[in-house]
Image (cartoon, rainbow, N blue to C red; front, side, top):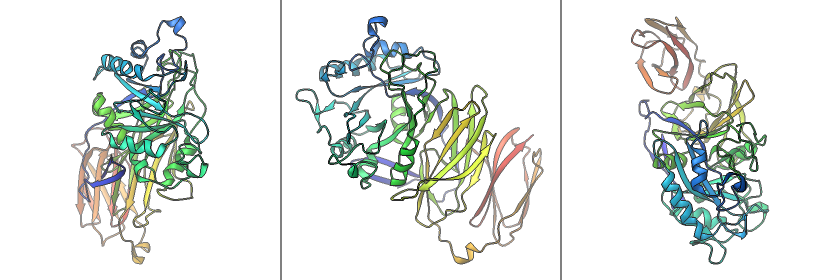
Length: 480
């Protein structure tokens, strides 16, 4: 697995695991919330006359009582322009920071101060910035760190220079974030720049409804930024995908049940910032759907490489017992590709899916894989990708291999699992893992037939992976 370090205008990859045996990862828990919201410090809390809440402290207190809600980031607009439009001043920045710090409760509920940089006019665009200690702006006497109003090149580089900071695109348009006020230099249309990739960690699947006053968790935005997301991934950027509310009224966590879902060991600010920087998050219309997307020891958000065809496992686990109506796997080429992502796999009426990509093995090519899950009630979940670079060398003979055919019985198994293969000249590699990626058994044999004891496995569903040479098969295994 390759770990992406975001720092100082470059993207650095450090080889953490290179062809090492698969191993279990540190368990990640699922936390649900939102990082795009406004209070009376800028143009939010528009109902303050009725609610009495007009600042971050009162907004956090309200959010803590929302259902299935573990964190709130308040991203006040970074400039003033006019009163309430958006009306933020540099003197209010320390108030936002101090009230966020006072309300924050690691382990219980996270309260995080941020800013929404920029304007929404053509060729500009809004950007959420977190874990940056000073207010960035351009208005005279209304900033702590100067950045030209439309100078996004300098903005990305400033974020890179601040350890732990990250940028997150807010409701992006194709012509947003330009270099010179022309659509051809926008983030999406211009040349890929590693410094920008290093600073930006994600964008939303949906945003809003920004001016909803609903508090019954039912006022959903029907918009989608999925098309932009597919295109920016093809451009070569490594971005995760989330979910925004963009609250302007006292509705924090309650205007709808959509959530940004962040995966981290425990609920702390430090873990949250690290998870966001490493793209351990996804966007969900559902407020408690837990999605596991893994490839061996790699998980959602990881950038990795290998010499074999990548095999993936998907688990949809909804805490209300909702069924996944469909799971779609999208894949595309990362970096300069004009071809939009295509559907690699599809399963209907199942909460699990296992698949191997044997069709896209091009040496040195980085591909991304992400999920689009639709629940039976129509709610949608979009995962952040796994990026994989195939570094094997495929000879002409390998393309002419006899297709791997295996026999696995009994399934469900109780004490013994018998596995046989039609290929006799290559070692048979077997792996059994839990649906959340924990390796339970691994075995390598020079025989094409073997019997594997399973009496020590607990009853339940597992993923069985069979490899011979460059060919891989993955299937469900039930132990009873």
